[in-house]
Length: 123
Image (cartoon, rainbow, N blue to C red; front, side, top):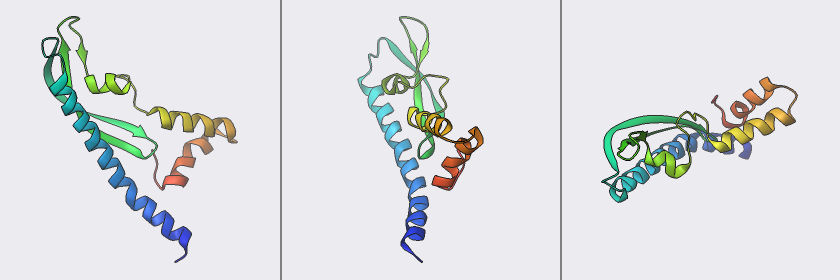
């Protein structure tokens, strides 16, 4: 086995660990926000799962949903803190990379398939 092969094997082994760790970090951030929130304004309603496609692959995490007593709207304090829009399914980093690949590449299909070539999996 050469170094390049070893490098790819280790990279592909580490990705799931990093994805899992990032998901847990986000959940811990959400717990912190639950403790320090304005409890008179934000009433906890439920915990929802979210999946966000990122540069390191899909990240799964759970975060709390609140009812804002001032506006009546449902809010996710973690999403607001991280500036993630409710409808957003792709991270800013992955979006920028995809746009760069599409602009620099010969085709959109190449841009779509390039992350799979680099990471070893499709996003």
